[in-house]
Image (cartoon, rainbow, N blue to C red; front, top):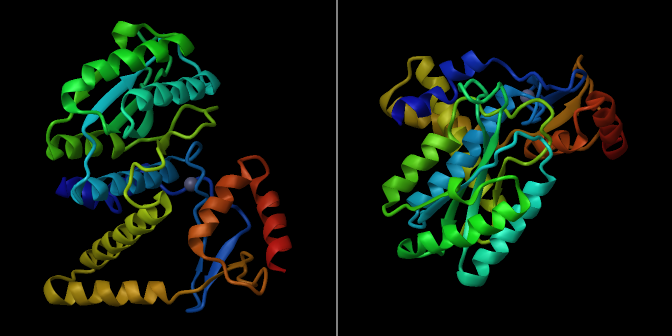
Length: 302
Ligand SMILES: [Zn+2]
C-alpha cells in the first residue's frame, strides 16, 4: 500500500503520461504569477484524468472506512453481452436498489463499473462491463438473501444469468479496505472509447456527510500527499519536510486562480476556484470543448 500510494503522484503518473484533454487555449493564472495549463477532467476520454478521479474516489472510500463505517457486503453484477449502451444498466441499478431497500431499509451502496480488458481467451476482444457494488445496511448473515433478490431483478433488465451474479459478506474492515484499494485504485481506469456514463456512484447516505464534503476532504488529503511527494523528491525529510508541506498547503489555500489566455492575459475580472473548473470542463462535453468553454467563460467572467 505504501508503494502504491507514493506512485499515485510520482512514477506511475509518468507512465500514464500527461493529461490529453486539456483545453487548448485556456490557462490559469495565479495571484503569485504562475501560469498553468489546467487538466480537462474528461474521465471517460483521458487516461490521466481517469486515474486522478479514481484515486480521489478511493480516498473517499478509504477515509469513510477508516473512520469506522466500512461497507459490510459486496455484490457483483455482470452481463453476457458487451455493450456501451448503459440505459438498461441504469434502470437495472435503480430497480435493484429499490428491491434491496424494501427488504433492508438501511441499504446504501458505493458502485464502480469496471470493464474487462478484452484480452481473455473467450472475450472475442470485447470489453464487458460489470458493476462492483459495496453495500452497507445488509447483515452479513443475510447476504445470500440480498444476492437472490438483487440477481433476479438485475437479470430481468440486463442480458445476464442469475447464477453468474456474485455476492459475499465483507466481515472485517480490513477486507473492505483491501477491496477498495484493489478495485477502486487500479492503475488504468479509462473505459472503452464511446462510453459516456458515470462509472462511480454512491447512494445518498453512503457517507455520513454529503458526498461534496467527503470529496473536499479527500482532495485535501491528496494535496498533502502530492506536496509531500514533491518535497521528498527535493531531498527534504524529517521536521523540515513536515514544516515545508504545511507552508506549501497554506500557500495553496491562499492562491487565487483566474482564467487566462495562453499568453497570460486575463479572460475576465472574477476569480475561478480550480475545483469548479474541472466540473465545468467535464460538463462542457468533449466536442469542440475549447470553443464551448471559452464561450462559457467569456459569458460568465467578462
Ligand atoms: Zn485529462
